[in-house]
Image (cartoon, rainbow, N blue to C red; front, side):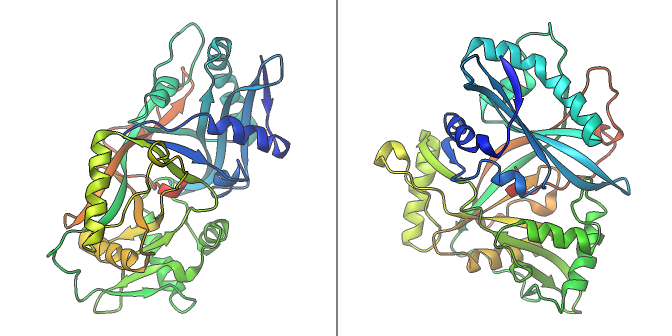
Length: 375
């Protein structure tokens, strides 16, 4: 087995290998990155590395990617790495050898890229991810240690219950524009100081983040104002379509019943339907949804008002999706809305002999910034 650093010329082979690994859980998904395997990484940064393990026939047997991001932590702009898309074939030799490469690769990246922290995000309903990252089958080789940082839910919003209370009448919601950019930035900076690993710390970093998202515009921002014209919340809906499609292959009984409920509710105008699975139709129908990005709010009522606006502005077949850290009560799913949740966790990855950083201490209760579209 040979470890290689993949590049653009490996795109087609990587896409084919990636499609062999469905995401399993309450719903089994096929992920399709269409024409660009590296497309999701480019939403984070221009800097990323994908490693592949090849057999004697030069066929890919395993992959892992490290995406590098500039973030603000402890008042300093730092570079962190997100370990993602770890895929290992059923080849026993690949499974045994891959574990021996992880730590040397991390040490190499840390030196060459000046990376301060490594993280990985795990879908807690997917056994394969838990086994690969958190439950190594042998301790004969040195492995990075994984420390739970935060649990969070990937929350989807599918509709609103009938007779639910209306949103706060005094909250005014306007689109982003050059005229309110200064006040929007000031609000994001005020809220970001309570978010470790924040992605925005000045106007330049905000502009870079906006420009990195295909099709995203300043006018996509929904900005909430109080009666005194103070900004009290913001979010920006955005569709991931064209970069990575989530295609349902099959639903468990619980997920099937929920899909049927949404189908019934859509007839009455309460909900939006989920796509039919490949197993029942033979056709690949991606989920239709928008991510809620750049979420910052003063309280949960303002969040619900923004959700209502985003839902009303989305296409008739689109539902909404966002990341909610379990301790963050401001972003709890609104009780009057029909929602579902997939549990995830973010882990800090450290060399075996390195002491855990201060942000992992139980006394630190600040919640990091997590954007659902970057998971």
